[in-house]
Amino acid sequence: MKVARFSHADIIAFGIIDDDELVVLKGDPMFAGYDPTGERIGLREVKLLAPVIPRSKVVGMAHSFYANREEQAAGTPREPRFFLKPNTAVVGPGDPIVLPTQSGDVRVEGELAVVIGRITRNVSVEDAEDAIFGYTIANDVTARDLFERDEDLTRAKSFDSFCPLGPVIDTEFDWTGLSLHGRINDEPFQSGNAALLRHTIAEMVSFLSGVFTLLPGDVILTGAPGTSGAVVEGDTVQVEIAGIGVLSNPVRRA
Image 1: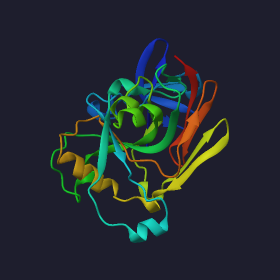
Image 2: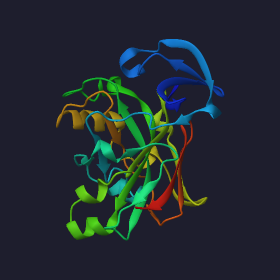
Image 3: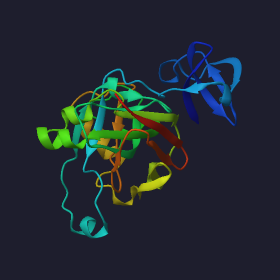
Image 4: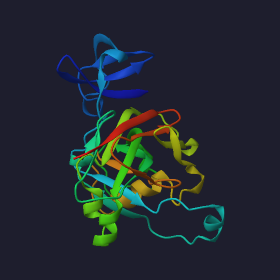
């Protein structure tokens, strides 16, 4: 099922998408279950928000895709690599990506994002997918010039608005069938699938849970297939994952 977080009549709520309507829920289904209020609202009547605001952290997987089949065939196993983004970087569908004044080279990368659904520590690979609430779309934004200047990802990844999420969480998405496409002003810049992933989603979750406790609502960005795209003020970025939807965000200057 597809779960949305939305605002309507100055109220923020959660709902289950049923065709062109939302079945409104009494609370956050991650904690309160799927208890409907009995109300239905048309999708066109609401503003979709980021489907989750991580209470703890956003974890980004780095170098998680092989560049091509040749690299995959020659690749040697290695531990996953990751970085952290603050939860203040999260924005929702339609919210602007704000270019910071400190940077003149901002890049975007569409990614599949995992939403954790339970407290998870030292989980095995075999049990790791039981910790997942669902999947959504992420746009991992980076100030490339600041990364090169700092030789570190922290500042480059951490600006407000540098982690758009949405439009919904799909609780039954099959990541092995991932088909992702990124566009800037309707021009493709990115395309990929799960075939070149270095590690399975379960392996990522298991590895990270051995480093720190994953909490309900934590988000894992599984990495970017294909290339990144440079954005400037006035652009619109769309990331589409078949089965989940399209995450669209305009770009503006601070």
